[in-house]
Image 1 (cartoon, rainbow, N blue to C red):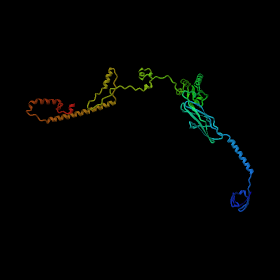
Image 2: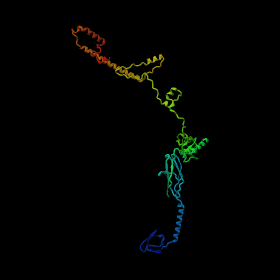
Image 3: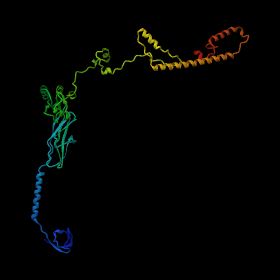
Image 4: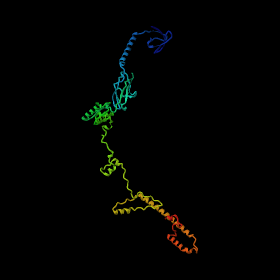
Length: 416
């Protein structure tokens, strides 16, 4: 097909061509003759190349076949889940290596009773997992969900029931260093209770039995937090017909001795009085110390103004007297007690001084009262002279003209 076009604007890269019906076509300038200018008419022959089309079609089909053979022949498969072992409180699950084909892995999750329990770490290399903390004699359902770039696939649901306390078939034992006789007895006991012994520490190993804490397998059991017990634990489980706790049977646990009766325990007083051993027990050390003996200076009554202070004991005379008699010397009073006695003496002196002063004032008042008293007349002096003189003599004997108590005396005179 021949097409005639008029050259319009000529540019270095693109030339504008005009069709007879005045349409614009941008055409590469490199494909046009070099001597064209604006207004030139060029003829372009357009034809279909069927041979080239067939070759391109063949090349495309070959490429599609290679892609299909490389990436489309296989597809990811659903994981296959199964129960490896079950105990009273744990379940060990395992599955076949996952098949991703040409897809990329997104995640592998474990579901328990229809709810997501968590993602499996390193799903390309890990093919087992252990679920602990389950209830005894309870049924659970587990399944896996595989997510890839080619889609999401789920495994079949596996129903697992945990064992009863009397079911010992779930016990899986790995043995460590044992004497030959003990190893033979352990193997027979494990067979009788329905448990099993495996070589090497595995994920389904429930107990590691040994008599010595050393070796590669012992270290691996500690890393995996597997209980390390003595052979006596298996014998105890067989005797009781049920699984027992391992606390008392740990390899490094204190061996259980005969029961201790508190009634036979000697009392602290008996131990102290008997004097059989010089070592004090914890209970004896906690006993309260005996009370100290009362010294002569303790519980001294406090001095008061209304009563005189008690006499001060003469410790030096008592001590000298006891020395002569062969006894021990009495302890001297402390400094605090001496200061207290000095203060009591000072208070007594102040009290005595005040009472003497009050007595003197009362005597002066009596003398003034006698001085202002009217003198008796002649008639009065007749028979009363002798009694009056006797009264004056009695007053003189009382001192300084004082009167006897009750005759105009003050309260201080009566008290003294």
